[in-house]
Length: 501
Image 1 (cartoon, rainbow, N blue to C red):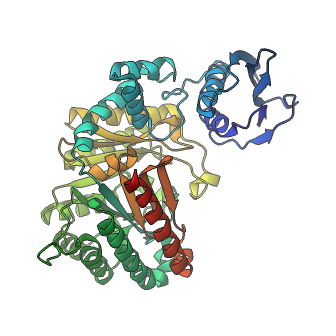
Image 2 (tube, helix red, strand yellow; image 1 turned 90 degrees about the horizontal axis):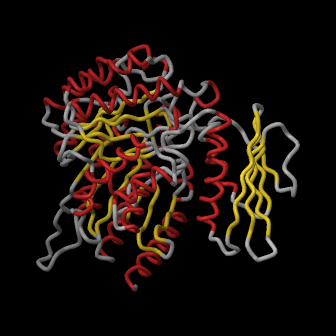
Image 3 (cartoon, one colour; image 1 turned 30 degrees about the vertical axis):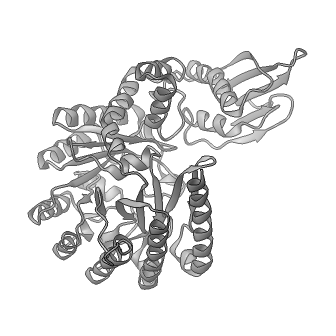
């Protein structure tokens, strides 16, 4: 399908909007004065008017018909408002021609709760912000209320954040094997396991760099989240070494007036244990020993045939056994992840998985919708899951989990997501993950450590400044000195600029 623009270059938002209706389609682009001759195209043309204003002409042509809309705009309209005006004309055309009504309306961003918060702050009213969601962005009442409910749960967590607090994300981009739906930067041990010793040593060096910057700029480490990949891919000796280095080189603050270094008190210390086939009694004991407060044991499904189709080399019973082992060893804050829309799953099978999870009584349960990303094995071989079935799965999860005392507390969306829905974290009151809230709400600086980790610094000239490192561990290792010099330079520049304002 052709995306056609003339008089402007606002193609990104047009493509994102079109993907709500054609998620797996590939697009070509045209900037010629006239719309393309193809049977299907998506067009937004901006023409100057004699009085100095501009005429926006939007047209959608599909095989079953076409629609056209026009609107007069100011000459100096900023790009963000131009994006909204283009979407506002094209979205009803797409709904009319396809018969689809996305539940999140024409919102294409990944953080709708954050957007609702900004609307509420600007208007001074959550109710007005909800009204904007419904009538400007065409969000359904169901999803508008979900965002508002999450906003209310998040506020005390945001209010409790320490001044100058930062979160730490430490990346362990290794897994025993790669799951077929995975799009994260993770490498199988068979493929890249030889890099682990050097990778760990470099992580320690980067941790020392980050600790020095934290102390220099008077920051306070609020949360630590070790993700990946699967951190428990490391054997017991490597995991012990990693956790010890985190304690010694990251969490021990600079000496106080008496010369004593004290460990930073954390609101949360999470390790994504994730894959049940990587969890052992010895690894759980190490995490307890080093003060880890929260872990994930992620079944993704309690249907064995679904796990096999997804490339998960464990059974449903394995996940149950490892969850019960973690309980036995004293972990009182455990999360479980599930994915709606996995191939071979059914609505009934997904319901059974959620029911079984509730019977185990973890502190939090995260419900993802399958997202088909280019980096995942499923991308080329799998059609988008049935939207109606996935919507029914998500609806059942919401109804069942809220009835069992869990509250939705964070939410994010992804491109190419089944039914254009969302990922939602549910938790019992008091067990919400501060890291997830602060990171997804863009309410705290997050300092990333390791290959594939992202750093975002709040308070820069553009509001949020993002720094990324090499995605892959072999690049990270090959360019380590260069990467660290540049990271240190950029962080010092950003933090110095914020401190001076």
